[in-house]
Each structure stands twice: as structure tokens, then as C-alpha cells.
Image 1 (cartoon, rainbow, N blue to C red):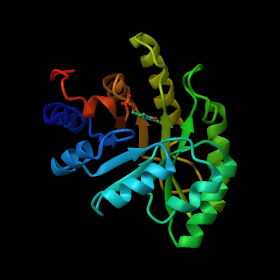
Image 2: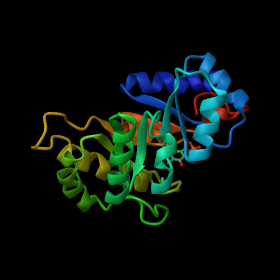
Image 3: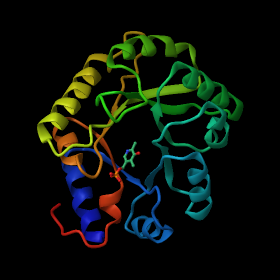
Length: 221
Ligand SMILES: *Cc1c(COP(=O)(O)O)cnc(C)c1O
């Protein structure tokens, strides 16, 4: 496990990318090992798991919300969440803004974009993104830092490449909004099975779960 972690870390460093360890459904031992080896960014896809894990793990971890977030649950994570990757509606954005105000924070968010037809129930259409960005400056307690996407679950690397390439293209098109001096600087794409393609296509944050926690995978995968 340590060898795989180090391999992925090195690959990330070569690409100036950040690694979020997706710890959903993993036993706590694995998280503690990763923490010991220096990992500080962890991602969960459920609010209740974020809250539990935060209790169980050291205080200096940066917690990432990567799963679909219900509006009525924003209040439980508003005071600590480091980055919400999965913003998929304007309603949700407004709710996050409100809860962030309540706790006196500016909450960093990514807009989730649908790039794969079949698996992604959630996310904005690529054509909606610039409009959403245009509407967010009025929300003072939100900081949109970039885009997030999930590729199709496929073993066809060409399909994955095309999807990630299209998201990177959108990212370059919208990253300098004309109403603010703060460019979008995070492109979150790539998981265990496709993170290498994601990095090659311009991801600067990858979200890796299973691969990091596997005991018996050979290095170089
Ligand atoms: C589970 C999950 C990941 C990590 O997937 P693995 O295949 O375990 O690497 C990344 N992003 C999101 C949104 C997820 O739900």
C-alpha cells in the first residue's frame, strides 16, 4: 500500500497535481496509514461519513466532499469542509452560500460537469457553466475554484481521453471570468482506473480511492 501511495504521489508531483485520497468505505486503519505517510487531503461522498471520519482522524486533515450533496445537509459540514467538488445546481450553491454566511466562512467549491453520458446523474451540462459562473459573484460566501468531472466507467482509453479533453477545454475557456481577478485554478478529474489519463489531459487534482487502499496490487499500476 505504501509503495502504491508513493508511486501515485510521485506521478502527481510530476504533473503539479494534488492527490485527494478517497476513503469512502475504507477501514480507518488505511486512513491512519496514509496520514502517517503524509497524506492530508481526504475525500468522502457522504455527509455522515465526513462527520464521523473527522471525529476519528487528526485535526489537520483537509476534508473534501465529492458526492452528491443534499441541500438540507450542507449545514452539517459548512464549518469545516475544505472543498466541495460536487456542486450540481444553482439551488445548492445558494444554500452553501447561506450556510457559509451563518458560520462566517467562504466555502471553496467546484462545479461538477457532466462529461460522461451514462453514469453521471448529477452535474451541470457543459453549456451551463459560463452562465452559472456569471451568477455567482453575488454570492459572497462562495468561492468557485474550478471544475470537477467523472469519466465513463470504461476500459476504452480513447473514450476517457475524449471526455477529459473536453472538460479541460471547457476549463481553459471559462477559467478567466471577466468579472473577477480570481481565475479558476482547480480541475478535479481522474480516479483509480483513469487518473493517468486525467493527468495527461490536464487534471491538477485527482481523487483516488480503491487503488490506494488495495493491499496486493503490484507497483507501477
Ligand atoms: C468513489 C469516488 C472516487 C474514487 O473512486 P475509486 O475508483 O475508488 O478511485 C472519485 N470520485 C468520486 C466522485 C467518487 O465517488
